[in-house]
Image (cartoon, rainbow, N blue to C red; front, side, top):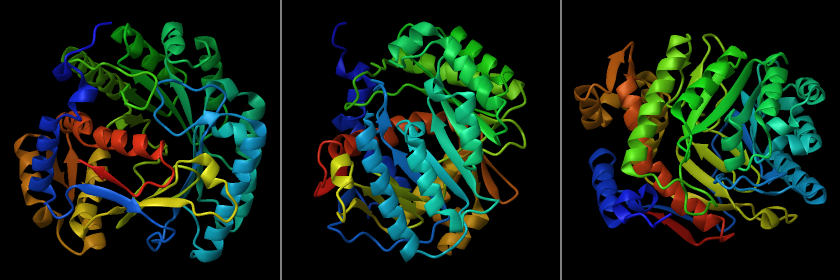
Amino acid sequence: MPEPEPWNDMTRLRHSAPARVVRRLAYKSIVGGGAWPLKFVACHGSPLPEEPVWDLYFHIPFCRTICPHCPYLKRRFQPDQAAQYSQAVRREVGGWVNSSNAVPLRTIYFGGGTPALLIEGISGILDDLSARIDQNTGIGLELHPADVTPDLVKRLRSLGVDRVSLGVESLQAQVLQQLGRGIDPEMVLRAVAHLTGGGFGCVDVNLIYGLDGQRPDDVLSDAEALINLGADQVSSYPLFSFRHTGIGVIASWRRFLDRDRLGRDLRALYLSRGFEPTSVWSFNRPGKVGYTTVTLEAFRGFGAGAASRGIRSFQFHTFDIDEYMKPGGTRMATRLSADERFYKAHWLYWKIYQLQVPAGRYAELFGSPLNSDFRLLRNVLKTMGWMEERGGSWRISPRGADWVHRLQQLYSLSWIDLFWERCQGEAWPKDVVLL
């Protein structure tokens, strides 16, 4: 394949000088210039004081096979090393339990990687947290179709897991092979059937689209089949390219527009089947609990590469798995250096991502009116037809959701690319500047 022109390669374009200028101007007009450029700085063993949290996230970075498109921190599964990692996580949990407020937890999520490979370690972690788990605590876990059996479903239910997210990605053999999943469509369909019949409060299934040779009709057919199989939540993601992954998409403008159109067609399908939008990517059956991690307002992360986000803090553990596992060693590596205005905007971004911004909650957290603090953004969103105000909330329209998706190219994906590439190559970076 010939090398694309720089202006026709979305990955290179979002790191170009013109993109950085646009990013800075838009940022300064909405957020202000006090925190530009954003910078993560070394914790040097002294992370910020922890804010109270009721939601936990555990990163399990082990997989039997490494999918070349996956941007997350991962390593090929080795039983001895995985057991050592479980013990390191449990040491961290023990320290946190002894030093934090003893409040009941709302949610606990295990992501990866392939968490089911460390099911015994997860059982131990839940035992360590048992004093903070009650009948209202939601426990979620990500799954690979190859691991889903009736026995695993029973084990998960016995551990209190009540919501699961299955990496389906596709029901087309060619696409599964292209993604290096090591499974076939029949295996995926069996896994979905086991889960939807397993008594979980939410079965989330993920679909990926935007690959070379992938037919839009096949993606829509896959989504329809998953709905018919009883999935409670469908999360459809375009395949984004990152510089540090082994496979990506040369996202030409034509492909970008085609992918955009397919995203709208998927939304129309979900709405026609009675599903409700719960974020830019996800649609749920009415009354079903959602499976969500990144949209939690604040959470404490455990494990290599895990983030911890508070209302006014954002920190990351070291991405080096071996460094993380050292007994008694420092785990927190970087923290965001930002001002109050940024954290207001950061909170607002994730609420917009969820398609609803409660103005009352904003005032409760920050002590000032949302409409005054972000008057310019409010006026732009309303003028463009991307938002309306109802019941004291901003409600993001379908057109607005499309633009959130597009702006991810300019901001979130660019910064993820810079941050993860640096941190996966350097255990203790002095700083990481996001331009």
